[in-house]
Image (tube, rainbow, N blue to C red):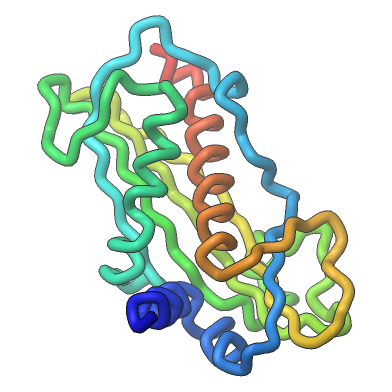
Length: 207
């Protein structure tokens, strides 16, 4: 039982500012907007000869490294990369070609709905919906260097996680999350998947 409590507290640390107080209140619903869809395996433009890549992963909260969150999410991020089929294999260690894929996810509270930062996450949504109590924005940055000395390719995707309290209707065009852990797993699947999809479609990646 203590293990379950610790797990919940650990996952509560991911969207710190927006979620912690609401989670502790015990009356919260979470939704992942569908503006950024899931990516199917067939959606990726595949290379004829996938090559091994060194995979570096980081998780930050408002720009600062969050080792605890990274430990809880690393396997999910690696799984999305491996399942894409874009690379022959992934490794934490350098590979002979020098190919490198770096993925960083940053979570930050969306506090000003009129800011440029907020608009990057909330396109098509009204922050002032009745019952909306918090929005956490997740930014995934995927940077790929195909070989030693090659130019880097960078693709960025964004996904919000919406928190509501009480008996309020779900935000339009959104997927409910049964827990914070499941909500973050959905965010990872969509942000990393779409960043990789954009990377695979980049003509420079095909070369």
